[in-house]
Length: 180
Length: 199
Image (cartoon, rainbow over all chains, first blue to last red; front, top):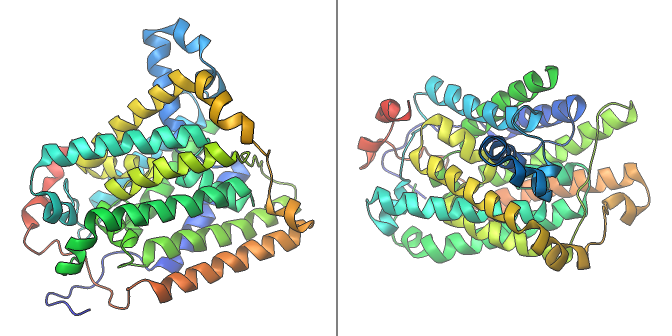
């Protein structure tokens, strides 16, 4: 594929990046246990409901199973947001966009449409994660690292379905135009 | 208290790295799913291969804590289908929504809100859904060690298998040309300059 405006790629090379991330994953196993991020959503909610509806939290199995915001799980997702913030502010090359270009080409410029879609998509990924007990990190990466069949099984299916979905939604656009 | 600081530190490091590889960029994630850019998927599988070897090292010196999740044939599979659809549609997964929202991407912030709603609904339905979907086909906390009978062999098989996946993704995905996502292209108006909106 040839592009006219060739720029140096702003992202890290994948191999050193994988060494860096696996170092972090192993550090987490050593200092805490299996890393997870979808549980952080439940921690956040637990914190909210403990304030708004304490009896409700006390009665529900899902909130009983996961600690509130004063926990590693919540600190981790909060840290992820801070890490993303720092990384975003210290990189001049990686574009920060509210609506991805590929989405604009397929669905137009409407922010409301994109935000509605990501809200719905976010709803699905977390509903699925909570049903399976983990997400890309908490089940696929951390599960597979522990050799768990659940992590491998989840990983294969999420990749297959996401690739199929992306193909159905963006496939024609990507074929027609050079989407960089 | 130490635990919280460790979590915060780990999260910052993790969020930083996934931003630098471009996993917080939904555009790049869509291109990965379309097999146009190999870097994120092969980065993910190589991370698993290396982490598995690292964890094996930790376990051999008796450090760390593991907790493999059980496999429920129906629930894990169905959850993965729901998850995969959302991931393909938005380009975000639960962890990246936090980092991308922190980075200042408004669509990720909405994905995060949607995620809170999805978690809240599941927590509400937990007592109903788990006995129907999860428990009947729950085969327990099975791992590759159960399959191969030996921990070291299982770790080697996983590490080599995922290493081969990383190599295969590089071959199958169209990623020969490494180019920047075109923020200097037609939509440069929405890029970079939106630092003010994230505050």
